Length: 211
Image 1 (cartoon, rainbow, N blue to C red):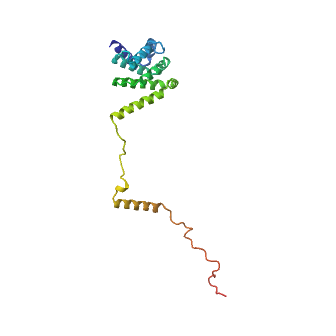
Image 2: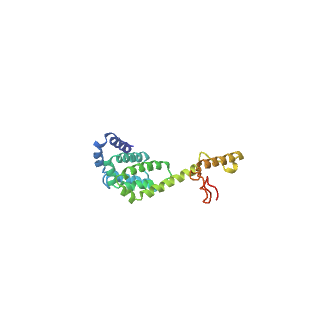
Image 3: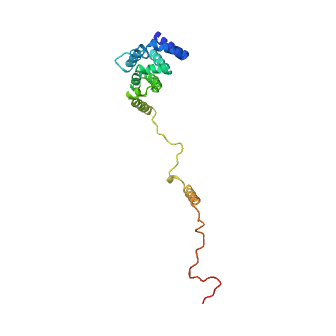
């Protein structure tokens, strides 16, 4: 409880004090180093979370730890420090792990938020660790779970009955409407087609008598 309270205090300082205290917190926790105190603590917590043979960290402490990571990643200096210590790989392990407990979904959600923030700073690390494939794999898993609990078939709101089920009067009315539309859309006879045909060549001119 004391460790969780300490993390929540640091989170509040980062959130309220913002940049003045941020650099000091990054230096004190060793966030920018791979072997720093905070990165090692996060990796151990994640390993205990995904390894059944290890005893997981207390839920309250793990929640406070992930919240602290999220608030650090909200600022450029904190995000760059998390990128420098290689936090992307550890967070993707949380997203990839398919746990049955509902509490694990909470950490997956928080990990996705942190990854979303630091990916803007380092897309290469996200791609090199197959981040997109892991996200798609996780999304397919969650969709399959939802289909098992709430199976349904998407239907349109307005359904048109088949033509065989319509009364005879409605069929005739539909045919008449189609005919009217066809007549309105068809062009009328052109001016050239309405001109009188030329007189035959052997016709006598008016006013002359035959020889």
